[in-house]
Amino acid sequence: MPKEKAIEIIAGEYERHRYLLDSSSVSPERKIIFERILLKTASQSEFENATFNLSRYLHHFYGKRTIILVDEYDAAI
Image (cartoon, rainbow, N blue to C red; front, side, top):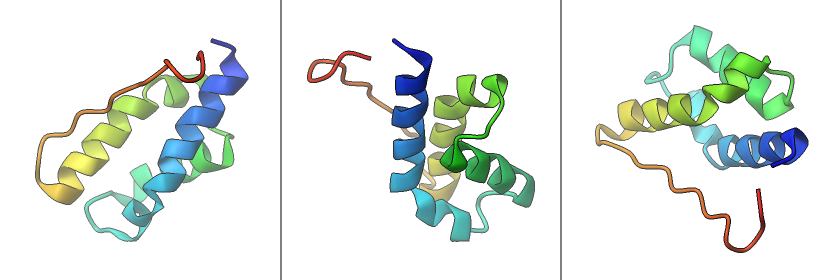
């Protein structure tokens, strides 16, 4: 998958969960990284860990284990 496409998909998922920025379940330091993902200015390492981190943020917010499914059937990634 081209790097730019992956960044777009990841940033789009973070946008869907933007409400997490208003939550106390995400630390101020993590919110900075979250915003860098949204702005597509995150480091390569931050993007590489973005799916894992989003899962963790959702877990802390909802208090339940989370699973993120990646569907590449409609559009190749």
